[in-house]
Structure formats: C-alpha cells, structure tokens
Length: 184
Image 1: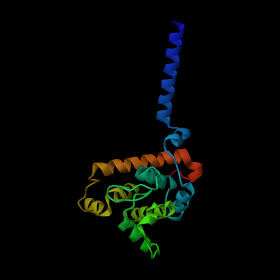
Image 2: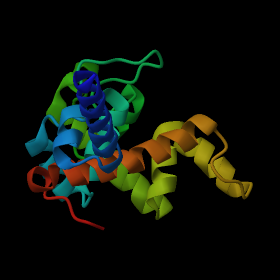
Image 3: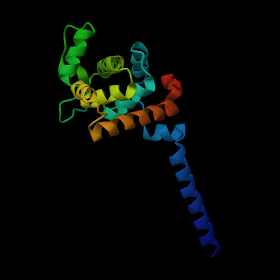
Image 4: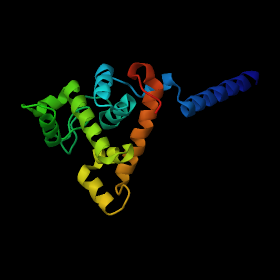
C-alpha cells in the first residue's frame, strides 16, 4: 500500500512540475519547443532594419517554423513566406537588378527581404499590430479596414497577430543572449 501511495505522490509531483513548467515557460522550455535557426542572419537584419530580433524570429517561426524550403498553397516561399511579386518589388527597392524566385529559398535573402518588408509596414502603419496584420492579410485589406474604421476583419489575421506577439515574448525570453533582444 505504501508503494502505491508513493507512486501516486511521485506522479502527482511530476504532473505539478510539468504544469508549472508549462505555465512559466522558462528559457530552456522555450528552446525545447521553439527552435531558433539562422540566428546571426536574424540578428543582423533585425539590426539593419531597426527591428526587435525577437519579433523577426517570431514572424519566421509563425510563417515557416524556420524551414527554408517551404512553399504555401498561395505561392509564398521560404522562411518568411514571401510572395514572388512582393519579393521582386523589395529587390528593386533595395537596389537589386536581378531577381530569381529561387532566391527566396536562400535564408539570407529571404530574411533580408522579409525584414525590409516588415520595417516598411511598421513605418507605414506606425504600430506593430497593424503591421503584422498587413504582413498576414495584405496591405490592401488593412487599408480598406482602416478606411472603413474597422479593426482587423479576418479572424485568422487576429489570431496571427496575437500568435506572433506571443512568439516575440517567447523568443525574447528563450534567446535574449543570442538575439540581443530588448525588453521593449
């Protein structure tokens, strides 16, 4: 009988421990569940485009889970899930003269273009939530919602914005030394 009671007590402590870790999400837990790849590229382009590196990492995780070879059913490619037409425009804005769709599978190029685009949206809209909504739903949709005095109209986009903001917090907590993330 004592062994059963001891086993139940150990099991109860284990469940409580897992519950505590799940709620508090310490850095090691974040690292276990939310990997960070290409950290030097993320850090460099975040610095270059005046972005919080944890925000950039959060967008990448949400878009591709740091898989550089993904392509969505809508044709978005790579780590930051950029549409080829959007990326071609970014290439021209940033001084590029030759754009190839295959470039979007290159982590350095994809993150550079995505970071530029995210900075462009932040500058255009002036706040992170609206910029993230535009990253997900497109500028035309966000512009229409704003003209009509509405908030984010798509539930998927509202979820996306909340998720990226949560990921930003997790990446800041789990990888602050690697990303040099600020607490702002």
